[in-house]
Image (cartoon, rainbow, N blue to C red; front, side):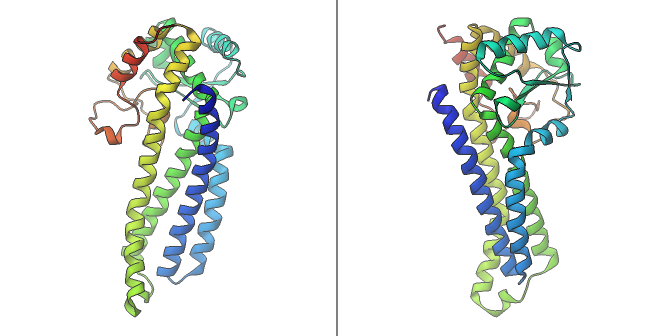
Length: 295
């Protein structure tokens, strides 16, 4: 897949994702409106799904920046960082993104925003303190590639929608066990079947949403690495940066399961997880691919 086909693919995936989540939330609402014999639950599910789907498009970046305690900066605050981002943006043919800094000693970075005109690059103070200029340049080029590839909208929307499904599923499970249900399950076999479907849906919905989030995140990193290396014409800068970031023992304090897939490298430290649950492809594979590039 080329850079140009990736842009179109990510735009289509974003709207497909919003549609799927909208249908999923309405389906959950329909199941539980039947179980509790309350049409209001279905009406509420329809309203929530529509409002949250479109809010995720317009406001997901603001929610993410708030969750990570990132602060906007001006050129006078970090002139070297500002010039670096400015020069790479010009080279990439992208609008100058807003720059945010997190007061965190762990080296890491992410990009967000709904399109290149509203792009945001966020770096930690630790990244600025611990990387050489060529390494920092590689990281910024990687994040600009996410903006150019339209990865940022897709992955920002995922943060909001996956969180919504998890919250609704948790509420549904608590309601089933503590709030009781209507007498449907006692009246006929269909009621019992619907009760079982409701329990299964409550368990599987957030699991499926999480797996979708992880799959999207892992796939996009390799292309952003390659695009970033092409932008700087120096793959070793990003490769070296990924080594330093992955070997740093300090976790990002404000990172969460909802936002972890956004960062350039896994923001958690000291946790061994199965490949199935990894938010990023193995860093060794990414570094190897970068060092095999011929530019």
